Length: 353
Ligand code: SAH
Image (cartoon, rainbow, N blue to C red; front, top):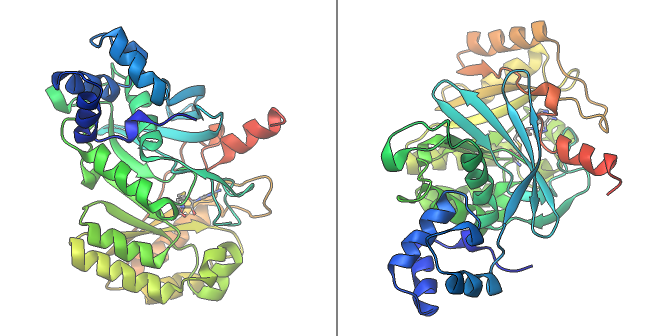
């Protein structure tokens, strides 16, 4: 596979452009074209000779949308294909204030969570920063008529969540580079405050992230209230204790001044009885955090059941009564395999890949 041009920052593109004997302003044209989601060969402002030189080293089409599914509620789900044929998926959720795109950071995942389809076949490979960014560039280009904002700020995707396949902190360097490039002024320029990074709780990397000083929303997948139960559905719990995760979250708050979030997927008979609500309140009360309760998207390869609607609201009520800030996520895109990794898993199965 050739290199990925979207890995480069504006400054790096400038260096490359000069090194190839082109004038500096060509770097700006190249950057603008890439930011608009164009392939190298489709950037009409550049000379054929320059593009040919670039194409000796860089992929022309970093990623393409192989399939699109549109849910009855407007949510869109994409199957992205990279130059080496690897597939990841992404979701676009449409809200009044803008579009939120859920991006993937790895092909597959090696965390092994029992409820998650992304991890069914383990980790295939990390995505590079530019491969992650290109998911957004492609979707922005697809929706270029749904632009919000004015002038240079105008774009369709206003919010990003790193909640697709993969564990972002297991691909730390590329994820960080992606975060720097996606927030850079002059590029797609998404505010860090509009970005949420979800982790299963890789504690040392949570500290490292806090020290980077990027004011994004840190979200931890908790899904249990004690380490033994957590290890039943999340093998990573054997490596990192809930108590240490909470300490890392507090450090994050101290460093960034931003409250943090927990995801708690409701799995019937596993983590959502009254005793679990009590334990969760005990664990999180008084902390500057918010709990997002998620309904389980049942994965057919896994024998875990979603909690009924009524009980889900009851669980939410218990948390609120106990003084926690919590919400129950509206379930969207279920009819199109909305959960992590479901679409890719189905596609691979259907096509005997
Ligand atoms: N690796 C990161 C990002 C994963 S996806 C992490 O673990 O946080 C984002 C969220 O979706 C996580 O909280 C994950 O546990 C949850 N999730 C995965 N599969 C799910 C499913 N089938 N139903 C409901 N939530 C799921």
